[in-house]
Image (cartoon, rainbow, N blue to C red; front, top):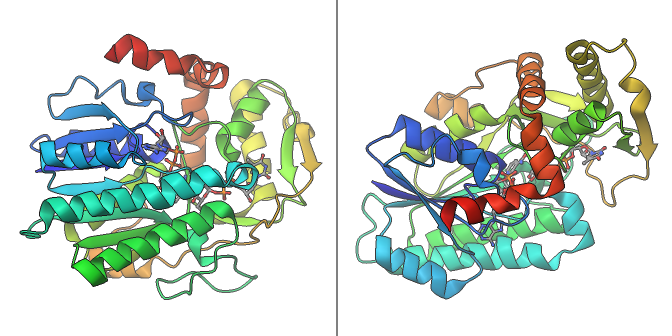
Amino acid sequence: MHILITGGAGFIGSHVVRHFVNVYPEYLITNLDSLSYAGNLENLKDVERKPNYRFVKGDITDRSCIESLFEEHRFDGVIHLAAESHVDRSIASPQQFVLTNVVGTVNLLDAARNCWSADYGGKRFYHISTDEVYGSLGNEGLFTEETPYDPHSPYSASKASSDHFVRAWHDTYGLPIVISNCSNNYGSYQFPEKLIPLFINNIRLKKPLPVYGKGENVRDWLWVIDHASAIDVIYHRGENGETYNIGGHNEWTNIDLIRLLCEIMDRKLGREPGESAALITYVTDRAGHDLRYAIDSSKLQRELGWQPSILFEEGLERTVEWYLGNQEWLEQVTSGAYREYYETMYR
Ligand code: NAD
Ligand code: DAU
């Protein structure tokens, strides 16, 4: 079994690569990543020398690169995570999101179809998507797999578009696909521009914590390692053509989460209670900011038996411990020095 994982040098992708390389030593895992600002091979130092792991630097928007990769390797499966993933960046520069998330996905779909069309048996194209495609909830209700798409940001519109293309390749060409839509992930190796690692880093450096609007927006947080285990289950046992929602049943308003994070950080850093919370600064809200996301993952639990392994409070403690124990990683990422790693390692 030779699986192509795209975006494997990013936050979730690196956990998925690590999981598959370690749990399935009999599989060959090829990680394709363009090493954009969010891609960091240091995230994979512990597996880079394993015999069943390979890295290819390549861009999914480069059609001929993708075609030749498929021609050369004849992959059995694809787990597609490569994407532009940050909502704020999509508001500032949407074009790159269309190119990577939409055109890049279509390039992969076409390459898989051309490579596999003689015999789709045993093949699988697994597209990793987000709950943001469903839009925003009010105070009640949960996103199910039947919730109509209603994306608001350029990021979520590009992800929604890519989901539609994946389904179209299934319905039109018979490509064996599966899609999952997951809620907000947290954990180690997340680029410190997203809420939790950004705020851990700012608290560490005693910098302001910029809370958008009133901090009342709600997100449903899932430990990234639980997302990787859900991806394993869906890749192996999900039904062809189906969609599965993945979530933690774990809703937090941003401000409650930030206060909890501040308490944990005060304790771990030996600071006075309330010292970190004093850094909270309310700033202008994100444009088009979705109010609430919450996932109904009962289909995945009922049909495939997956559930999250740890409670959020424990996962957040572990996450804080990881960033505080890996401050060099944070320094490298925030200074940009991590970009030199590829040159040194893969020259
Ligand atoms: P990330 O930004 O940390 O990583 C994205 C990776 O894709 C990086 O390694 C980057 O170098 C690579 N990449 C970007 N453009 C590329 C291109 N043109 N060609 C090849 N590689 C490219 O993102 P993440 O948070 O790990 O998210 C991974 C996937 O999971 C995305 O598809 C995202 O939409 C989805 N997702 C994320 C979350 C979350 O909370 N982070 C939740 C649900 C779904
Ligand atoms: O729901 C899944 C999505 O979760 C993924 O598809 C995205 O790739 C991922 O980035 C994430 O999107 P969010 O926009 O929800 O995540 P972010 O960490 O950027 O923000 C979380 C919440 O915190 C959101 O309501 C905005 C708020 N926020 C964020 C930042 C960076 C702040 O208040 N201040 C900040 O500085």
